[in-house]
Amino acid sequence: MKTKDLVKYSIFLASAVVAGYIEHLVALPFLAGAKLGLANAIGLIILYLYGRSRYVIFGLLRVLLSALLFTGFGSAFFISLGGNIMASIITLCLTLNKKISIYGLSINGAIFHGIGQVVVVSILYQTIAMINYSIILTISGIISGFLMALLTKGVIQKLPKSYISN
Image (cartoon, rainbow, N blue to C red; front, side, top):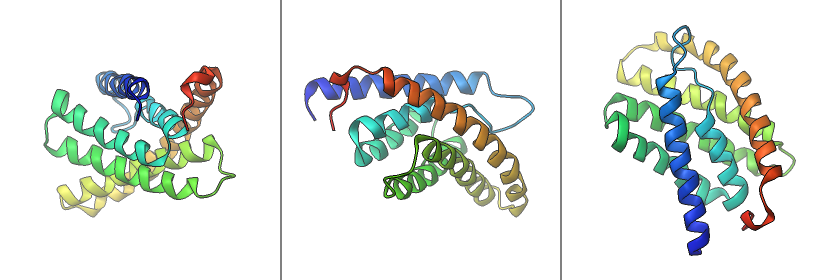
């Protein structure tokens, strides 16, 4: 990766960490675990600009840096990591279909992020009852995934051609 691209990548990473932290501060009190997903929208921009492998690294670095700076390496770290891994797996699988839209990627990524988090919570707290919450997170994932796709598409369209490196 060229120095100029590394700087851009790092700025996107820092922006995603800060966006995730801000979302954590303004969490919805009536819908535990549901967030808009601004950091995930930045991840989709990374996927578009830098490709699949850098997208995966970006997500892992974002979770790691958030843990180092804000949450520590307790249950929140593992819950976040589980969501990131599930969302990344589905996103990578879906990118194999060249006809998938940004909306399909974002909505499915948001849904599977929630499912990954529920699976980790179920394992950590040894309760299958958490699976019931998947329905709520799926509905919120559809809504937030659509909104983040709309945002991501707009940002990508406005990016200068010099940003596109792949």
